[in-house]
Length: 495
Image (cartoon, one colour):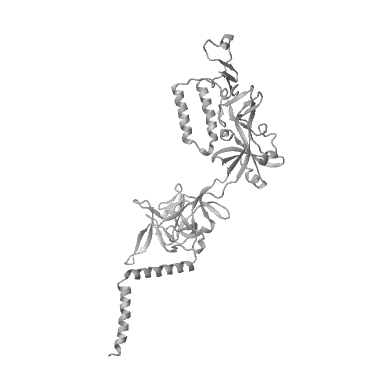
């Protein structure tokens, strides 16, 4: 007995330690189990193959090609008739009517022009200031000067100095004015108030305060050298100091019709040769408009000519414009070709289908055997994945109906068994299930397992396909699908 006491003491000691660990500290046990589970999960994840997913996007099949075009427009440079210090009244890039104020000339740097505005006109000035302050961008501080010119020109218009057609003087007395009236002398394209001569535009047009040497370039004399942007130089026509009579002072674009010329490779020319009109996206502001398209030759090379009759006011200050020709017009949902699979479905004539009056779903009568072995029917309501028009005449319980179209329904093979007999309601006619046809689709994995979704391909290239976004039991934007469908089977649990 004495010999067994030491052994019993060892057993009791070990048992006490186990009870102390597992009996009194259950948190340690739970943590150990969780740690072991995480460790095994990590090992299985690292050793198993990964299924890559793809998020369905929306857009065209490929990006449209971009070009840099040369703008050809009708424009001319205007020179000042007299000298003096210049004050600008027209905003660069804005359209101005004939007889509108463009600039003023005075003998001193600070011209004296006295005008009086009504409360309504002052309110318009305040609204213009408020609108400009709300949209002001510090990164484009130069717009402040353009707005200043525009505001000063508006004030002149409100005061009646500009904006009215020129009227020739009828008598010497009218030209001399009356006593007490402010000294004001008017010629056809200018009016003098105080010590300043306000110079007006002779024709309608768009004002530019620069020149680049392309003002005389037309579609008849343009050359391939004109497309070289490395040698392009633009000269600012604004003056801080006095100008002399005859100096260039601004450029005016006098026609809303304009053209854009783009160089084409042989491949691009072949692709575009049958186009008469093309939708153009201007990358400067992402605006789009359609233009008449033709291909011309300049110095033996092919160029695309885009003719527009509007939109020039947005690009009158640009000689070279980056554009995108919107030729890829087929849009939809973009998926990889590797995601596409085919699946066989039972094909069933629509004449054997009935409509559930409560749900509106398609139902079929399937012939079965009841518990007593007698013939009976049961109603089955499957998902119809596709409906295809059948050119054959419709066969009904009363015979053929030539006015009613017939369809073929595509039904999942899991719903019926080969050899099942479908009964036409109100008739003894039967259809034996067995014929199949494939549908294209992808495996959607939004819920963690592979589910077949039907697709209708609109366009494709070597890598991707554009599918319709309006397919029954199809895809929607941002769905996640299996990128390589060859590695997955339907209903596989992926995560």
